[in-house]
Image 1 (tube, rainbow, N blue to C red):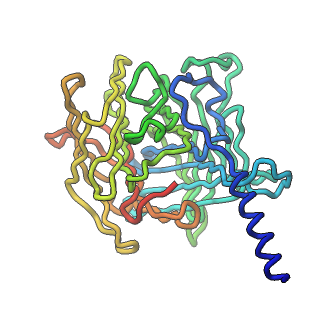
Image 2 (image 1 turned 90 degrees about the vertical axis):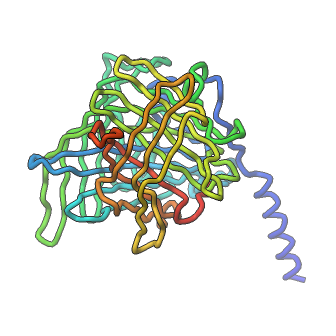
Image 3 (image 1 turned 120 degrees about the vertical axis):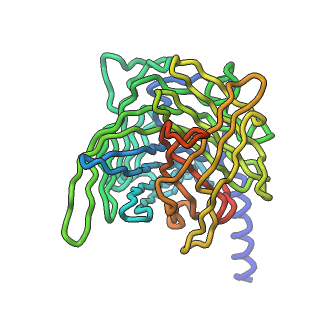
Length: 384
């Protein structure tokens, strides 16, 4: 009898938990950005990230790649639960350093539920902290005022991470405006990720960031600080339905060209590896923005690399072609700084992905820029 009663209690509790699951909003199609508020967290949405990648140069002229990403995830927990210990929000972060002299990606990660002064993401502005790691906007009282203009808040950020083998202390400042992503200029920031309109995100980027600061390498001999300068790319994105059910993963690039222009492009792949959806935007030197529909973009693998650890095969050298009657033609090749830029994040996000610094070349092989290539779903299908 007690066993039956216990089962009944569990059944009722499970039913109540299902009924009380939070409702995740779709990405709005008719909303404009408001700053500095939209630099901050959007906790109603299922997932969100503050994502910085870039190239650094040491005083000795050596090239390094870096990634710092903070993620926020809203969990399936009843919002009415009064307990301070209820894990409503989860924060996790990845940091990585790509150094050809090392030959493989050095990386670290953190994860904690939000709260208790350990993990916090402000809703008012960019200020994310996680177990000593942080990413924050540097406010300027002379310029900062609420509004929907890209100029309504200073695009100046700082980040600090302490990894097991490296530390990053970087100052990251924009020299131009942000870029509202999305294929439709009438709906800036609405970025569709699949055939179904609700598979979308709110998305803006800040390309052509100038970086300065310190990279510390930590080994058996101690800590070695190196001053660095460079360029970076910031992505801000939040969504509740990022992936179509047929999608297995994506290829993404954020590229800063030497002439001051910039390009973001992505393709979502189906379970057979074919293009399910694609999109992107290009900002020219004169400030003009060109936006791309799925038919405008093609990614072609030129060379792959197989990881000796995960056994996954990654298309690390790719050609990206932009063509169509209403767009400016472009063909580029992205070449990795080094092949082994695989990141094992199974302790936080539950998957392995490839996140790498790449050089941009024209069809003749001449260097014309630098950026980052992200590859997911090649180890196992991505699930949100």
